[in-house]
Image 1 (tube, rainbow, N blue to C red):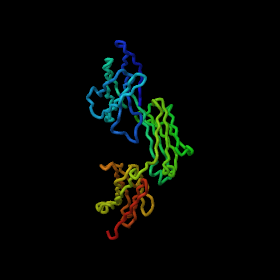
Image 2: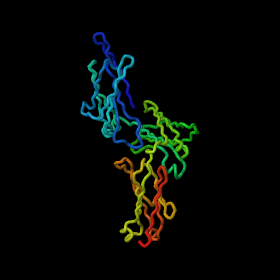
Image 3: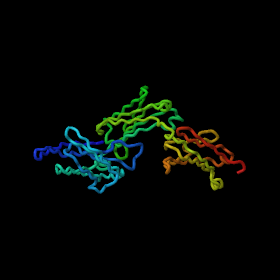
Image 4: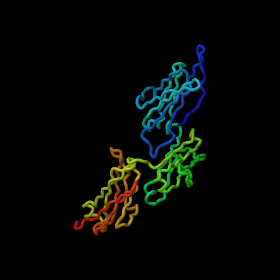
Length: 331
């Protein structure tokens, strides 16, 4: 979280020292693998006496998603935190404000919560597991730490560690400037599929002047029967309309009820892998049951289909699953 410090005076009233709070905005500095639709931000009222302080959001116009934590007491002073969960777009707009009132010292403080688009850029940090393609196809796995939305990457350092104490083999890319002028740095830790399956922990540590403290991200293979759900595959032949009018036809492969969404698709024709130029995959979409579905479409020559070529659709997920189809004789 980003915290801005300032000095607060003591106020003496009838011989009793009362202290107004100093208010700090609390903002997320690290993102997940994708932009989230909601974000939690907060205000820290620090170093006041006596209790209590009253915190409102946008002068009381925000009433939902608010949580106030119990105050803490140290060295004769109180501190308390209020957080609110709001739409990311509302935070980004830069129009979010917490309003802190300390009646004992007649103090009222309005603190702006800086948004991504209002007062600067805040780094987002994500850690990614090896892909199904890494684990099952190339057999060369990697865990990736990605730091994005940086104003500068000049003093950024990323270091890795492993719980199994094996040798660290890492590669960190040069900073890549994005279309919005910010920088992204990717760091890959090389691992084997066996390392991942043994459930070792892999940790990256990010140090940068824009971060108040170093950020540590750790990842390992998820455990439990519910952590991975393999897809059910439905394979569909070309539509009759295509067979009558086109030289090329499309075969559809539908993948349903899989989790998580990261999956790699391959196609074979008579046992020969097809180039990725020959097929098109949709982006996985979450269903109401919180699992995913997607569709892959393979284009082949109509003559291949008519002669009875065997077409295989392959899902590379936590396991490798495949299904075959061919023209039914006489049709």
